[in-house]
Length: 450
Figure 1 (cartoon, rainbow, N blue to C red):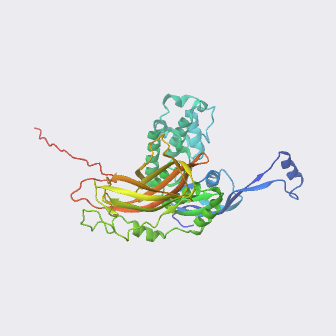
Figure 2 (tube, helix red, strand yellow):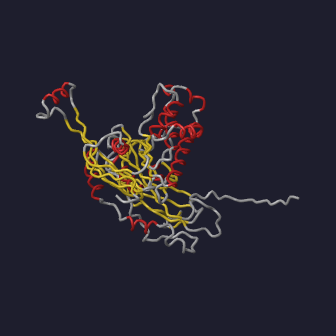
Figure 3 (cartoon, rainbow, N blue to C red):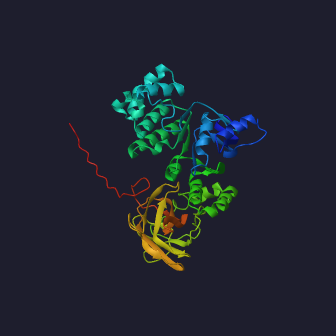
């Protein structure tokens, strides 16, 4: 374990004994292990990884994949069946809403009790108390029993305590899914500040967007096994592919991810996706097509009887392009072949940044509408989305998706992540900053005062 390692997990496994009936526990004890009256359930099996100091790492996976079990063992609240965990520094954890809180105590009493569990003494907690209460926004409820709090109030108070101890490692397990958007943004800003200070953050969320935007890398767990450890955008894409796959195809998809099939070498990916490469030197203001600019990070979802192919960007006159000019209009076009009938069919597009942040898109059907009522098998559909390029210079990706109802349930009939990519050309004398161009105008008035 090197000096810059914050967490090291080696061959970690956790097995639970499942008894079908209560009397089987007694029988197991009486037989002293000579006969087995339980079934083994491996919540985690042979998981290994290392996290450096200052990294923000996301853990993602379907329900029951072992995420919470892993975090509990890292925090020391659960013992492993086998394997080892080594951590450095003070750990603060938000594992479950209200964990470490006594519902009969007031918020004030729970602040001091929870802070002492996390390693602060009475004087240190008293010095930070006002800041904790202010961040939590509990107000006068701080002197009411916690059992009277809403789930959002409990989360706010628990988070406020955890971040005030300035932990070396902060573990967050879905706790931030509770609370309004304003407070969530406040929490994420504090997480970013902790990361900038050098804290290590383990973040579990079912929100793919949060994982991509917050985390340097991500771990994909499924059925207690770690399938992948890599860049957040790629791992999230594979998670979504697995999540939306038909049951009969999941085993094959798991093996593909384990074997790294369809994954690109990260160094190649970085070179290809560098927004400055071949763009900074371009003097052209008109759109053009570069045949070498193709995504290697495409993730294809399992098909439910539909196939998307030929995704491309065109000018309004129909010419292929992948280097776009700011403010001009373009078409995103793809073709869908249906091999089975489906109802309420809808089509979508999504533009993403190089890090995977979702910037915007559109659906062929507005909210509450059902799309195409019925599309029969052996049908081909050409889908066209027209949009104005309001993005500043950089590299961007496009998704394509088709949804429909099969046997009364809405599913992705097919979906492609990073189906196409494009670059936006520099605009001469542009003063716009950031990702999206809002065509801001600036007025400055200088007045001399005597």
